[in-house]
Image (cartoon, rainbow, N blue to C red; front, side, top):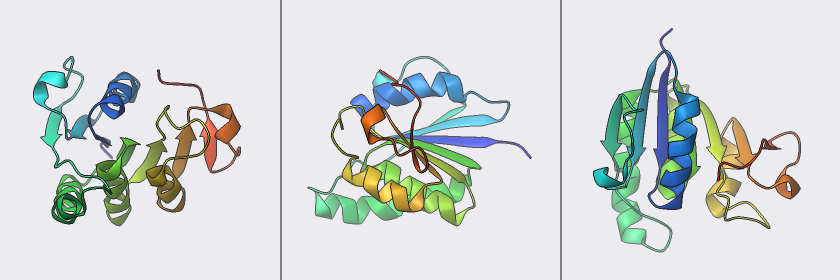
Length: 151
């Protein structure tokens, strides 16, 4: 079976972290990046494809109402076998949609969350196959693992 890896994230620090993950995620299959970031923020030619996503968060309910179905249907259309997300809102929606197509899912919580998992990270605990934290004190050794920092 051909691996179809979808990397999904918001812009800013989430994208910076994802770009570091992308090099390690390079597989014999296809590697697609789905992000809200502008194309000029993307570095290198690591990806087989780049997909644009709407930007939304919990502080923008109307944008979320419009964006959630778009992210969900993009994932359903792409049918990835694996999904990795560094956050935030579009990433968790992508993880949820990925479960509907049978994708293996990995949530990597932001390095900015030093005391507890992000809101999306806490949702990921319920829907993602695995959650990574970038802080050893947040790992539980089972569902939340610490494997080092990306940044």
